[in-house]
Length: 380
Ligand code: PMP
Ligand code: GLN
Image 1 (cartoon, rainbow, N blue to C red):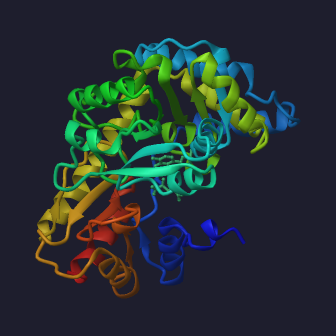
Image 2 (cartoon, rainbow, N blue to C red):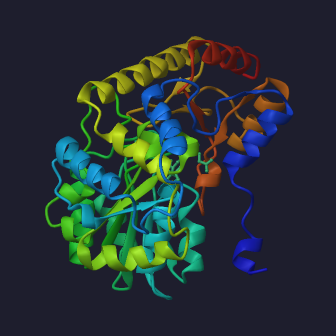
């Protein structure tokens, strides 16, 4: 086996979900909701499955979905892409793989922010890239110009950015986007911007895509996911938006990864993207209410939580909560002894990990949160 892969453990999401099943625990680990998806989008997928063609759709996606993606972002984020600049993929995971495989040449340096979503680094290494990390630390997890300055070199070709950020639940602000944009332009670097959580934002925050930052449109590859927008995480319908000179090579990588994505799910996603703004506002306020229930519940039983500005996640600072075991120990004890699964943050670091923070998913019905909180109370 390729030694790069021999050394990679099973992802922390799968490990914790397996333990949750084994111990009959409430799963507040892996990020998936147990409420809040649009039934009409699901019905549309069902109708398309029985009523329409189930043969290969075009390689770069159903024309109606490519157009719907472009229209959606023009309406919601005021960014201008043509349908031809959209490629549909099997989830954001495949979008990331296609972009990284197409854009990295062996020896290229790639700047990433840790803690990081765990799919990035294995693909970068397999493509021959050399990851360079900018470490973010609690409680503010801020990106600074100094940290960026230390990570970018004249061999940097790519930066992988994620906003809103999993697992910290931060929405990086205008100043952080500005310094990142300046670094990319100064070093003539392309940014792959993983924006799958773009609609899941709280407290009236507004999302600014990286491609809207001055000078970035022509050097940004934007990645999105219907799984996150519609809370249908198992659907694995994603997309890439890129300027022409990047979209072509990425589509070539996509054709040999999955080639296409189920047409009924694509048609249903196209229908969903056209929903009125009320739908997206309602989704945000439902998840915000769930966030508040979990945050208050955790504080009531003595945990110190960190702000959740977006995503389905809320982090706990174990040390500040007076708990002196590390994140992995705490999560193993929680799932085995208290029947609640959470995610430790340390596996999201490649080096020098933060070991006193865990992540919980609050995109759950009140009763699920209540059961989870009862377990969290006993494990303190
Ligand atoms: N990027 C980030 C930051 C994510 O949180 C996720 C899903 N957890 C993905 C990518 C993968 O999205 P998909 O399920 O569409 O492949
Ligand atoms: N994105 C989800 C999370 O962060 C899960 C992804 C996965 O299971 N690979 O929890």
